[in-house]
Amino acid sequence: MRIRVLASLLIAASVAGYGAADAQDSVPAKQLFGRMAGPADLDPQSIGFYTRGCLAGGVALAIDGPAWQAMRLSRNRYWGLPILINYIETLARDARERDGWPGLLVGDLSQPRGGPMTSGHTSHQVGLDVDIWFDPMPERTLTNPERETIGARSYIRPGTNVEVDKSMWTDAHARLIRRAASYPEVERVFVNAGIKKDLCDRAGDDRAWLSKVRPWYLHDDHLHVRLSCPPGMAGCKSQDPPPSGDGCGENLAWWLSDAPYAPAPKPDKPDKPVKPKPPMTLAGLPAACRTVLSAPDTGSTGIAVNVPLPRTKPARN
Image (cartoon, rainbow, N blue to C red; front, side, top):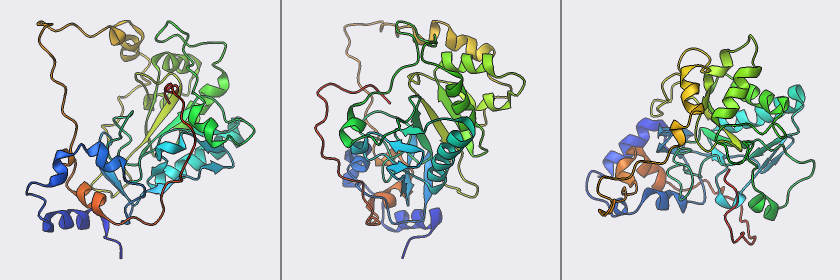
């Protein structure tokens, strides 16, 4: 019988005596969560914050749908809360039927039990984040090797940080982002600052949705959608509401300047080695994440993808 909601998770963690030192506390949390093949057999629950939390009762996105295809299957990062899966399916359908978008290429959601990832994202830990490529879905079904090796294309001109490549970027891309931001459950949509500027220039009089679209680093080839915590999910911590206004003013001007991309200043004592930040362990996550990690799985595990991986790292997504 499934353990019920967050209160039960917290009680279980307390009863098990997790206040004492635990052998798992010496292991980086990304290794513990990264090795879990299936979701915890618990009621769906986002626990903690997007960059410091975990996922109970994760649900898998179908690898192929009528208007989407999942990429990078070997990562096993196509899990989320049911609200996220429903959002992706709804966006894919609406973007095709209402905006003429061919279909979504879907990148990372979360791992089966969320938590820190072995590589890549700092966020995507609670089953409420998804990356969607700017490249449209092709008319045919991609093979597993293609899903591992095809790279998402940057839509920013080479050699620039924020100049949109007009030979690639279209009105259809802008409509996709507007559609993605239009649903009430969406909290943020992260894109490159140059793409945000393009959206500001195209928006016209209807600008309310722009407040959700925020500039961020390394989002030149995909949009990152983040949903708000579902109502009544007490263990989930949302971001502060986006600032008022359309976000096309002073804040965006800073992102369009050279300041965000300038090299970090050199240390005062260059000969002194910089001590790396220790990896996050279970002790740094909400207590209920211990129960999520130790819970039996649902019997639903990620698909096995046995394809030769490229020698060089594919373009980020």
